[in-house]
Amino acid sequence: MIGWKQVLWLLGILMVGMPVWGQTEPELIKEVGEMLSRAKAENADVLAPKSYEEALKLYRQSQEKYTSGQGNLSEIRKNLSAARLYLEKSSRVIKVAEVAIGGPIKARSDAIAAGAPDFSPELWREAEEKFNEATRRLEDDKNLNDVKKRAEEAEKKYRDAELEAIKANYLNETRDLLEKARRDDVRDRAPKTYQRAQELAAQAEKELEENRYDKDLARSLARQANYEVKHAIYLAGRIREMKKNKESEEDLLLAGEAPLADIAGTIDAIAQFDAGYDPVRGEIQDYIRTKQDQVEKMSQELAVKESQIRDYQARISELEEQLGGIAARQSELQKRIEAQEKIRRQFAEVEGVFDREEALVSRQGDAITIRLVGLNFASGRAEIRPDYFPLLTKVQKAISVFPGSRVRIEGHTDSYGSDQGNLNLSQDRAAAVRQYLLANMSSLEVSQTEAVGYGESKPIANNETPEGRTKNRRIDIVIEPNLPTAP
Image 1 (tube, helix red, strand yellow):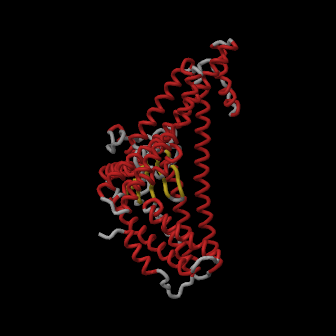
Image 2 (spheres, rainbow, N blue to C red):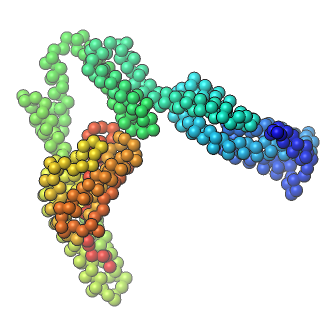
Image 3 (cartoon, rainbow, N blue to C red):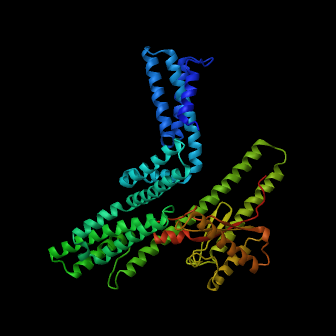
C-alpha cells in the first residue's frame, strides 16, 4: 500500500517546474498564504500538525527566497506546489478527525474555554500529549482503533482539566480566604459564620462536579461562600477589637442600634429600641414599600398619559392633513380615548381585588399584568394546591372586569437548574393555571387564552439572592383589553 509520503513524493516530482497558468510567483505565494490561514482557522496545526508544519516551512522558504531574489523560480514553484499538497492533505485529515475523534476535539475546546491551560497546567499538558499522539497517528494512517483509544484517554484528561479550571475560577479566592481565616483562628471567634462559609464552598464544588455546564447555582453558592468567609474574618476582627477595648455586651447592642437610627432619621422617623429592632425595621420597610408603590403608580399613570398624548397628536395630525372624513376619524379617536379612560377605571377596580401579599397589579400601555406573588408551587412541580384556589378565584374576578379580552398566562423561573428544564417547568405551570381558569370560567373561551413558558429568560430581580429568586419564580396573568382600532 502506498502511503502519504510516497504520494506526496510522486506528485512533487510531477509538479516540479510545472507552470500554473495565469499565476505569477507573488500570486502563488499569496494563494498558499491564504490556504495556510484557512487551515489554521480549521485547527490544522492541532489536528494535522505534520502536514501543516511542512506546508508552513515550505511556504516560508518560498517567501524568503522570492523576497531576497536569490531563489530559483522553479524551486520556489516546486515548494509552493508541495505546500499546497500538504495543506490539501491536512484538510482531508481534519474531516476524518472531526468524525473519528469529535468528542475529544469538543472536550479540548471546552477545556480551553474554561482556562485549563492556565488553571490546570499539569492535566492540560498530559491531555495535550495524548491528543497529539492520536492526531499524529491519524495523520500517518495508523490503526484507527489505536487512534481512538489515545484520543479517549486525552478526552478524559481534558474533562478533568476543565473541571479543575472551573473550580479554580469559582473557588480559588474562597479557598485562599478560608485558609487565611484558619491561620488567623477565625473559626474560634466566629465559628458559625466560618462553618457556613465552608458548607457553601463544599456545596458549590459538589454542584460544579455534578452539573458543570449549568453554573448559575454554583456561581451563587461560590459568591455566598466568599461573602461568608469575609464576613467571618470581619466578625473575628471585631470580636478581637471588642475584647481589646473591653467593650461590654451593652456596647455591642448600642452599636447595632446606631445604623438603624441613622436610617430612620433620613425618613423623619424616631427610632426607639425599647421593644428591640423589629418595630424600627418594620417602620422603615413600610416607608420603602409605600414609596415603591407610589413610584410604580406614577410610572403607570405616566405611561397612560403618554399613550393619550400620542392619540391626541394623531388626532391633531389627521385634522391638519385632511379635511375629508374628519368627523368619522374624530369619532374613532374619541372612542379609543374613552376606552382607555374606561380601562383606567377598570384597572383601579382590579387593583382593589388583591392584597399586596397576593398579587401586584401593573399596567404597560393598554395591557394589565397581574403578578401572582402569592401563588407558589412545590419544587419541580406544576400542580396547583387547593389552598391557592381562593387566590385564583380573585384572578377570575379580575379577568371578568375586562370581558372579551385576550388573556395570556406567563410562567417564569429563577436561574437555578438547566435552561431546558426551567423552560419546560414554566410552561407546565402556566398551562396548569390556564386549565384551572378555563375549567372555572364559563365566560372564558379557549381561543381567548394562551399559556407561555419563558423559563429563566425574563428575570425581574437578582438571581444571586433568595429574595430575588423568589420574585423570579412567578406566574403573570396578562390581560389585553379589546380596544377600538385607531383610525
